[in-house]
Amino acid sequence: MRKSRVIAIPDKNLWKKHSFIAGVDEAGRGPLAGPVVACAVILPRNYYHAGIDDSKKLTPSKRDSLSKIIKKIAIAYQFGIIDSEKIDEINILQATKLAMFKAINELIPIPEIVLLDAVRLNDLSIPQIPIIKGDTLSLSIAAASILAKVKRDQIMHAYHQTYPQYGFNRHKGYPTKMHRERIKQHGPCAIHRKTFRLLASDSTL
Image 1 (cartoon, helix red, strand yellow):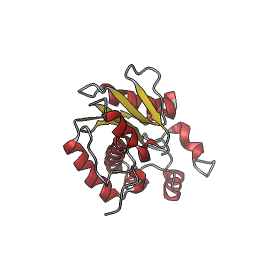
Image 2 (cartoon, rainbow, N blue to C red):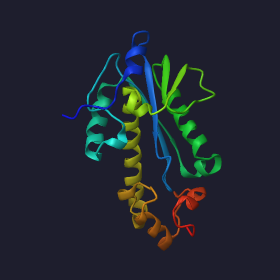
Image 3 (cartoon, rainbow, N blue to C red):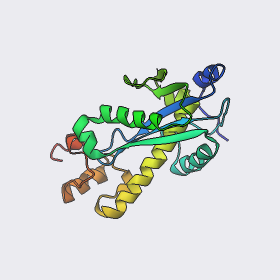
Image 4 (cartoon, one colour):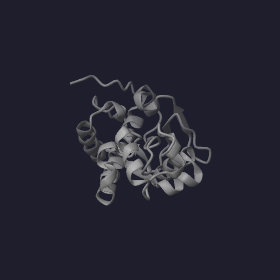
C-alpha cells in the first residue's frame, strides 16, 4: 500500500489537549457549474488511516472507498452546500466560507477547535487554525476534502440526469474542453455560474 503523504502533525499535537477537532475543506471552487460543497468532520482522537490524503491525489474509486470508511468511524460530519445562484450573488470566496460555516455549525458535538485549509472564517466563535496546504498536512482536513469531493460528485451525477447534454457526469462542471464546447453548443443552463463564464479559455462563453 502506498504510504500516505498526510503528515497529520497538526492533529497529533492538538489531540494531546482536545478530543473534538474538526477538519474542514471544500470541493467545487473552480467549476463553471454546480455548487460549492464544504464538509466538516470530527475524527476519533488519535485516529489514523494511511490511505487518507488530499482528495485531488486519489482516484474516484479510492475516494469512494475512503468516504465510506470515514463516515463509519467519524464522531460527526456535516456538509454545507451553496448553489450556483448564491455563488453568483456573493462571489465564490464568500460562498465557500458560508458553506464551511454551515457545515461547522451543524456538527454535534461542537468542536473544540477547527482546522481549515488556508481559509479563515471571521464570524466563527470556535477557535480556528487555517493551514496552508492543510489537505496534505492534516488528517482531519484531508478526510473532509474526501467527503466534500465525493458529495459534490454525487450532486453533479444527479444534475447529469436533468442536463445530459453537458456531460456533468464526466467533468463535474469544471472548465474542460468538452464542457466549454457544450456551453457553446447549448448555452448555459440553470446551474451554470453566470459570473464564471469568462473564466473559460474562450471569452465568447
